[in-house]
Image (cartoon, rainbow, N blue to C red; front, top):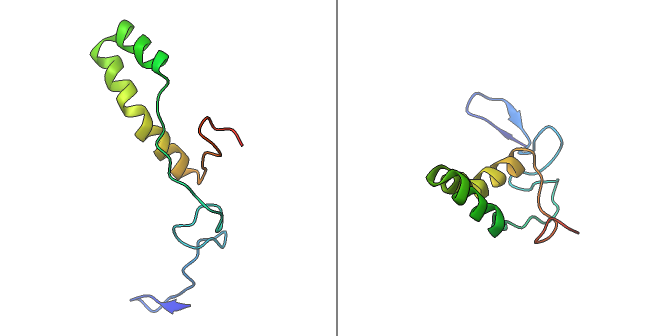
Length: 81
């Protein structure tokens, strides 16, 4: 426990009791690059041109933000256990 600048007591944990920076309450968390499947990238480039390439380029960051926001993680390279 510590006091903030305003004098409030804080434990350093979130409302669910998880330590900061430890998604899932302390379970090991790996940060893995998420890649769009090559077939998706090719189809988007073929049908949408530059907009499709920009969409595919943004997918890894979008997926990472989605997972982080919901405190989820990938279990394996293809999302398998």
